[in-house]
Length: 141
Image (cartoon, rainbow, N blue to C red; front, top):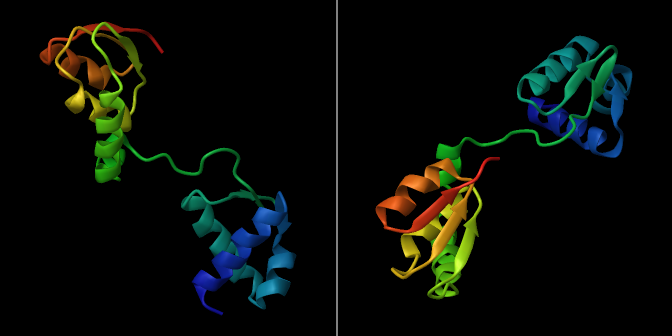
């Protein structure tokens, strides 16, 4: 059995159960214990599971968080469309909140030049908002 197949079986087992034992994986894959131990070590290094004595357990929460630069380069077309639509809903005199994030950052390019107040917790948003002349408040958190 190929390594990728074994890894898929291991991860599928962890979807059904919180923890799995090495001997269960050996039976399912017909691989040696040493091969399964190497597989578990590799999957743990790749942040897919956590090694425990005699087996493996599921990781809790998100497995991998992308960096801001990675997020900024993903789904650009969709972010532009969202930004354009959201900006079209803003009217003169509005006060809006822009949460930190790459989708809301793209909205700033489409904000209409009118008298609006922007509240944000996005440090990356502040400079761009001020350059465009918007009254901007930065809140903590």
